[in-house]
Length: 414
Image (cartoon, rainbow, N blue to C red; front, side, top):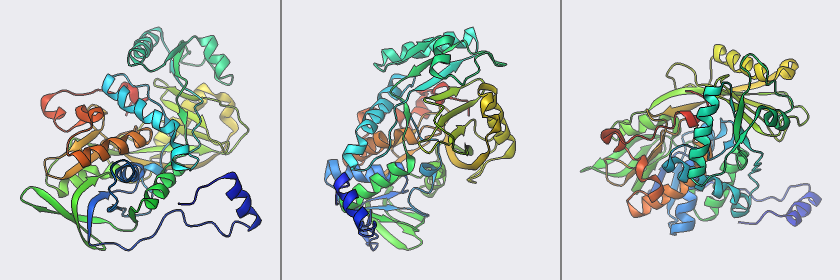
C-alpha cells in the first residue's frame, strides 16, 4: 500500500491526478477462506483489518450484497462519543473513541475526526438532575464530563434560543466527542484491509449458511458456494435475517432512522447539540451543511427511507432551538435501518452455532463503535471466546436478565 502524504499529493497534482493507484483490490472470489465476514460496512471491514493486522490471519473474505459502505455506515450522522452510563458500555465506547483518535495515522487515511464536543441539553430542573447523575456516572467510569449552566451553554452555542418553549436549564458536554467522516472511515479500513490481502467482494449476497452437526462450514451466495472455517455476521439492520438462516433468533427490531442536511452555510455551529426533550441532534459538517437527526420512525421496515411526518418533526425541533435556521433549504434526506435490542445495547460474540459469530443490534450506536467493534470481534473470532470488553454483550443476557439498559444514552428516544 503506497502511503498518502503531502509529497505524493504534490506529485500527483503535477500529473493531473492521473497516477493514483486503486484504493483497494477487486479480487477473484476463492472457494475457501479461513474467515468469511458477511457485511462490508464499517464493522465488517474493521474486523477484517484487525484480524489481519493483530492476528496475522490473511485468508479473509468480506462479502457485501451491494456496494462497500452502502448500508448504515454511509447513512448516519457520523457522531463519535463515549458518554455512556453503564461501566460496560463506557469502557467499550471509550476504547472505540481512543482508537478513533489515532485512526487517521494508523490507516494513513484522513477520517476527519473533529473533537468539537457533544452537548446534551436539559430543559427542566428534574432533567438537569438526571443529567448530573449521568455525568457523575461517566466520571466514575473515568470519562470526562462537564456540567454547563444556561449562560455557559449560550456562550458555547451563541445561536441557541435558551428561552424557547422548553427553556434550557443547562446541560453537560463531553469535549472529546464530536464527528468524523463516515465515508473516510469505511474507505480507510477497506484500503488497509485490502493491503493486508483481505478479499473484499461486492455484489455478492449471502443466500444461505451451510451447517453440519451444529457447525457452520460455509455460505451460499449469488456468486457460488464458499467454504469457511469461521463466519462472522456484521449486517446492521438485517441481523435477524442472517440469524434466521442459522435457525436461531435474536431479540432485535429493525426500523428506519432518518437524517437530513441543509444547504451549506458559513461555520456557525461549533459543537454537536443534542436535546432528548425537543428530540433532535444537529451538527455542522466540514462542507457547511447542518446535519440533522431525531427519533426513529414508528414502524418496522427494511426500507432505507423515512416518513414525512417524522421529517417535519425533526425540522420543527431544530427550529425550536435555532430559529435563525428558518430560512435554510433542506437539500437531502435519507434513512438507515437501525436494529434495536430491548436494552438498546449491541449483541456481540458467540452464537448457538459453532464457529459462527455475531455483531449486531447496534441501534443508533454502530458508527461510533466501529473501531472497537472490529478490534473486539477479531479477538473473539480468533480465540473463540468473547473479548473482555464485550463479555456482557452476548445473547445470554436476554436469558439471565442481566441487561445493559442504555436507552437514555442513545441520545433521543427510539
